[in-house]
Amino acid sequence: MAAARPRFETSTIVLMGVAIALNAVVGQLVGNVLKLPLYGDSIGTVLVGVLAGPLAGVLTGVLSNVVWGLALPNASTTIPFAITSAVIGLLAGLAGRRGLFAARRAPTGGIVVAVVGFLVGLVAAVVSAPIAYFVFGGSTGGGTDLLVGVLRNFTDNAFTATLLQSGVSDPIDKTVVFLLVWFILLSLPASVKLLFPQGDRST
Amino acid sequence: MLAPFALPVWAIPVLIVVFVMAGVSAGLGRPFLRSLAVGSLVVGLPIVLLNGLVFPGARDVLVPLGPLAITRDGLEFGLPIAGRLVAALAAVTSFVLSTRPDDLMESLVQHGVSPRLAFGLLVAIQAIPRLGRQAGRVVDGGRTRGLRTTGSLRVRAGALRPVIGALAVGALLDVRDRTLALESREFSSGRPRTAYRLLPWRPADLLATRLAQVLLVALALVAVLRVARVLPV
Image (cartoon, rainbow over all chains, first blue to last red; front, side, top):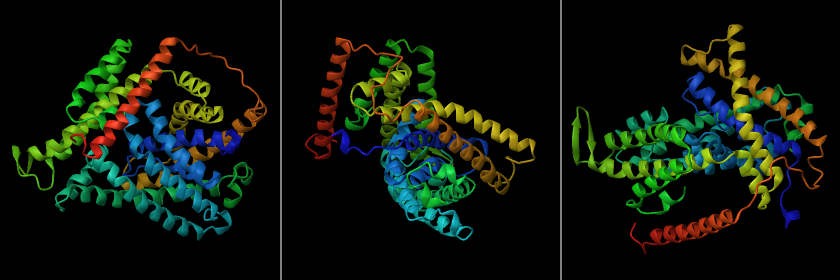
């Protein structure tokens, strides 16, 4: 049994741990310090997906939501969004495997990365809207609630309002996150990228 | 934590009382109650306000408030959702505040979870405050060199790349150093580990675990029966 389990390299394990923390800290930084209408809390998940593959990305996404709950009890309500995080990690991993983040594709590669980020955001919106609606009654406890409230005046269906809000917020957020990861990988030495199983795809 | 979502609405107040009493009887005291109160306000209030005030199709107005109105339909939708989340929050808060993360991981490893995965989780829990301090330093460092982190949306968005880029690259370089340090201590050798903290496993722990397992199965059963409409929703 033990031999059948996927075994992550030491570098991947440490990367996943740091990435989970990065998700939490960047989420706080974007929301509370820079006060931007973005989430930013999937940057570590995308980094792991690109550098260490889809499976590591999925695991990082899921565990991020669990660990926030363990580190900050008030964040435990985000646990249902682990499903969205897993999808983001998976898609980022597949994009990384296809070599979309390869430094040799710069500078035009950034446009492809932005488009892929936007599409991942659309998928994330479709996945997270039902969670936001059925578990949180359409509210996610952030500035986006205001948007949901405004949208509810234009539609006769509360779920549509939540879906529209996700459809606006998520693609913008994931486009920014994917571009940030692209810039981070461009400035990262190849020797560090090559520590990770899929790192050669981004050199 | 799953109970508030598996059981019907009438069980929510009971669960909140049970979880709060569990936290108080565990001696968690004021920090527990404060954390729960803040969390309930942050999580519950927006849900009640959003649905109570703006709920498409709601006609049964309870309190008219100018252009808005508190409606019965909105409250009937929002209150149970907020209640379930507050109950879940009470359960998680009492668990988190009464359990050391390293004890939890050690215990998980003793019961078959991969030590490598448990280590990864511990790295994450310990890295959050460390990386948070580092983020503060990066922002302060940027400001002293003229980076603007307040002002218009455009100005704040402009700070995104330098601040997060520096933080993430620093974190990734730290991953390299930690990996080398771990490998020099035979982290991936696969040989048995030595532990600084040993957790005794008492008969009462075993009893509590078995009880929790039975409760979990019962909850799953109730949830399935409610979804299948055998039990009232």
